Amino acid sequence: MSICNMMSFDTSSTSSGWALFQNAELSRYDIIRHKEKELDLFQKMDLMISDLLSLLENYKPLIVVIERPPYKNDPKTLTALSEIVGSVRTWSILNKADYVEYTPSQWRKLVKDEDEKLPSNRDELKLWDIAKVRELYGIEGIGDDRADGILIGYARIIEFNEWLKEGTAIAI
Image (cartoon, rainbow, N blue to C red):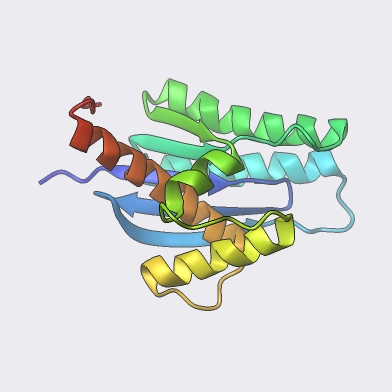
């Protein structure tokens, strides 16, 4: 049986959570950090892009899922995040991987229980994300970046399973 690798990412210029799913089962997860104070935003961004591309080259996923940068960031941060996401997208195109972007509200809507109400402020949402990973996977002691990296991938699995039920899924 062949293995379908899917990687999911919650990216930033300083701390990016990621997860690897193999045949829809969570296999690995971690975080990439670049908090070096002597580096400016764009130097950190370059390091982050390099590390993300190394992960992608190492695992060669068939599916890549990433959080779309929110437009509410200041222009400098939005530019950096867009370049990071664009680098991951470029890798996906060049390697013929299925590429999916979700906004935070899109992936959380897929992950939450049908009758569950999501918190409204960012800090409460981050706590909800951590609790959801604990509920789904029994993982304790992780921060919101790792939790988000996991949940972004889980959202894609949920969406694909919904398509299978509807008979609208297509093979990649």
